[in-house]
Image (cartoon, rainbow, N blue to C red; front, side, top):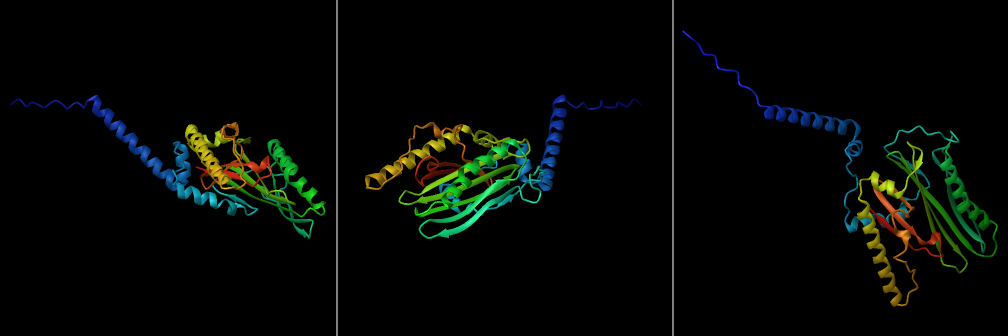
Length: 284
């Protein structure tokens, strides 16, 4: 008796391809889950280019802006970083309070000063420290020697290290005699891994934001703030007028910014160049 053995079924190339792709997807999924468990969401999002910045409601943006004054504790907050930096003074923190003075002299001055020093051995950082000295320390010394002008001068700071980037924010309030109060804000952003300065364009890219959308939001908010100012002016108030066509609002020229808790703050402090406390803060 003849027995016919059926031919072995051949698997098509298409089915093989589907099997291979399915296996690869499963492996990738397992790797992603493992990364999230072991390394956390921040690492995984960075690996796949996922932005940590979420769209914020107007209320959320307003709450972050309103909380800006509460950020300053004259300290440094470190998260998501295990860096070995070359310090100038091993006994001090990466950023520490180098000039602290609280003193009052009736009719002369009222000082509340906390001026930071970046404790990193680097030429760029050296330039930062020199600028901090020129802007804040020298002013403090001149106020301390002034008599009869009833000067109120406050300097405070806060530093953050997130995703291996150091951000230092310094704010001062100066009221001298009958002059309007002048608020100055300076920020310094430094990549601790690559030892280089971080620009706003760099930060936008690192956070996965779209440059055109960031620029559009800045332009819209500045225009709205100017409209609000003009409305107040019509009611008889003295206001600070913004030049909405100024290139200072271009993101490539915007150099006062920082990131805290994955929130990007862009600041336009008009007191840096004029006798005013007016400033605009945009949060992404």
